[in-house]
Picture 1 (cartoon, rainbow, N blue to C red):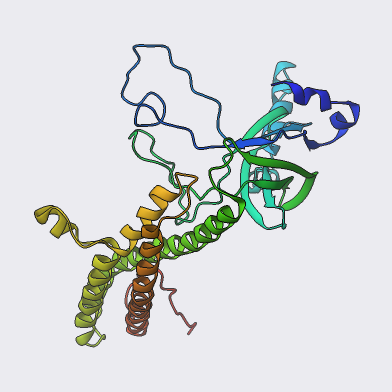
Picture 2 (picture 1 turned 180 degrees about the vertical axis):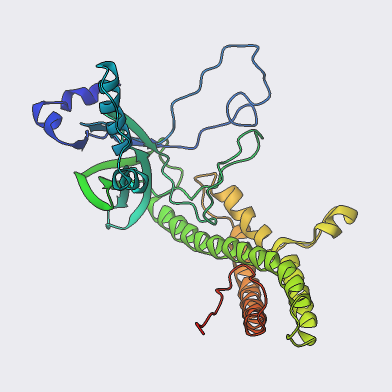
Length: 360
């Protein structure tokens, strides 16, 4: 599709960047006829090529390539080397400026018809005509992670948000450079329409969207609480050692830490399920997180309305999670008291505790 080139006139080429006209997008969920994405377990016995990405396609133009300060300096130095000129070691202030330089990037911001942000997409600055695809989904609601997704297991899926409702959307392009934000392109509108009409009436789509928002907020809180619980558990092993190696702390403190550890184990059983019981009995009572993931793992992979089961699962898990969140908050506060006691007793550092020091 090179229709975007019709918009590449003299005026567009003079801009630092521009989003070219966007085609209306057909919304659908790709099928997996082999059970998993792509060719599944079919092997390489026949020709295979991936389909184009599913989503709204944004074609954009960037006038200039990004060149770092270090690369600019090295380019000048290479030219001097070709001419046989002597090179000088750069002064410290130049090297420090190069080391502190932040690499710029582009940010696409997608908003709905009411102006509410739906998704942001970050990409590098690359000269020329480029394309990026938005998969109709909102942001991810699981805890932030810098670890790349491992796609070596075919049945594993990367974290994803829910699909937005069809309608009119807007996208803008901005650039982060040298610590400042600059808007590069005016807002461009585009439409999303379902590939097959009649699956859900508009009124039902709005109800589905409202339910998805509720589930998204619940999974955000549940997964965040579980990550916080794991952080507390990691602290406990170090706190136990710190208590034993601190002379002036009350002897009862060690028992307090053990009590917190027991509380966190109970929270984990209710939040994530009983892995030990599942190992020996084949299954265990459904956990809070398990109920929520039944909804996200199924409803967020279809364009259907929520079933009565999904609504029931949401009601039960949200009710149970409120009590667990209070218990988790209490455990965190108790650990805070132990950390304060360790600091007052002159204990060596443990993670998350800022040392107190007074000059004498």
